[in-house]
Image (cartoon, rainbow, N blue to C red; front, side, top):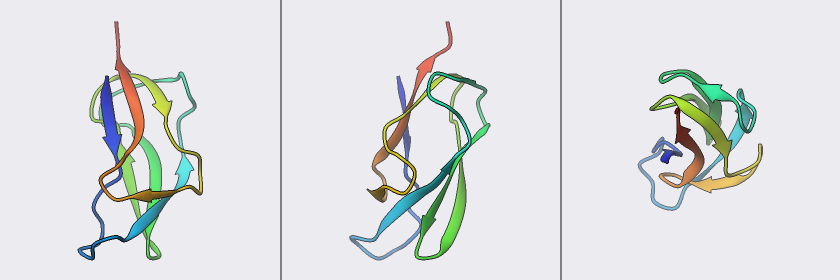
Length: 79
């Protein structure tokens, strides 16, 4: 499994972000590089792409507060 991490978008320690929107459903196959989510920190948005191909599984819900660098989803390798 490969974790998708919340990106570091702020240099300040302890700043949380939120997953604004998931663009992929749980159990859906994704290609490497496909945008799977939009995340936000302090009113700044960024797209997050799948680092590898496989089956997508979110670990947090839209709107959940997340530490930067924490896992937000996992991808099971394609077989």
